[in-house]
Image 1 (cartoon, one colour):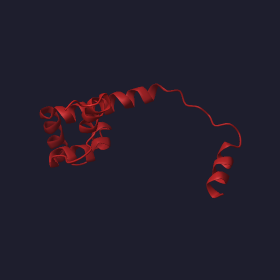
Image 2 (cartoon, one colour):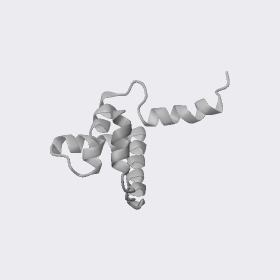
Image 3 (cartoon, helix red, strand yellow):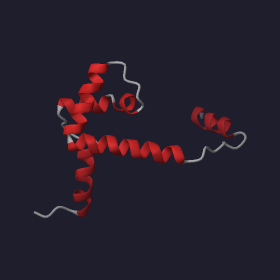
Image 4 (cartoon, one colour):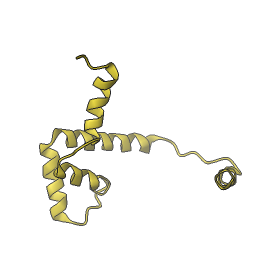
Length: 96
């Protein structure tokens, strides 16, 4: 049975970002991905365990690389100031 183009593209992406069952070590590493990437880990043993896991897990290595690349791109996006009254309009729309 031939896979659709969509399935061939989506399946690896879903595996990369953890859709479905995931080994516990992968789940642990990804649960702390923000703290790890930002250098804000407070547990040295956990940080070392994550570092070792990433070095031996191609899917998590790709996940963390993609996260770092995404963050780098987002840091290059110029900050935009919202037009006058924007916040009030959003709040009014949420309330109504």
